[in-house]
Image 1 (cartoon, one colour):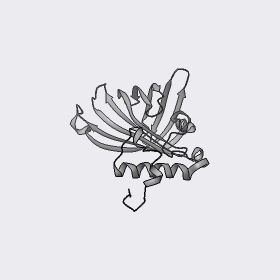
Image 2: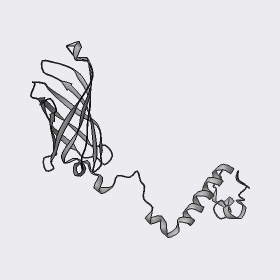
Image 3: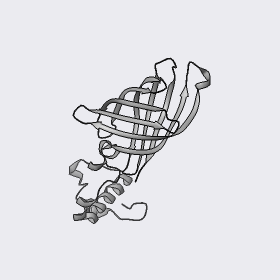
Image 4: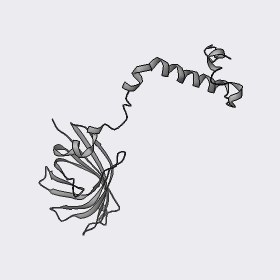
Length: 185
């Protein structure tokens, strides 16, 4: 049998597809199996050294990467506000300090905007290898209060982004899709 590119599988496949084994594969499946076996043999001793670049490194824990001081922007997309003029997109420069209380599983962010407005985010942090979760309460010096739930985290030593779903619960009620983003040296 030959693969699309003319590779003859005849004798190479016999030990794996002996009729008595009960294993039957189509021609394309045989080609895939041979390609996998060839790759495994080619890698040989080096197979142990190959790492998945998409795998989460042990030093990629958001708690390790996020803690500290950041400069960036707070982007908001507001909707369903009780005062319709507050609906829409907004963004402002922001200075963030991110802290963790690991024994209590808490994460906090103190944000100071260029306007002088200060906001605090404080909540429970649940570490999950693939999708950490953070939810809690939100309050600002202008009287805004609410709750939030994280949508995703992105963190490297020099860049961060935290997407939050915020629901204002005070005198102004809005749903806010927020991105807290920053950089540092």
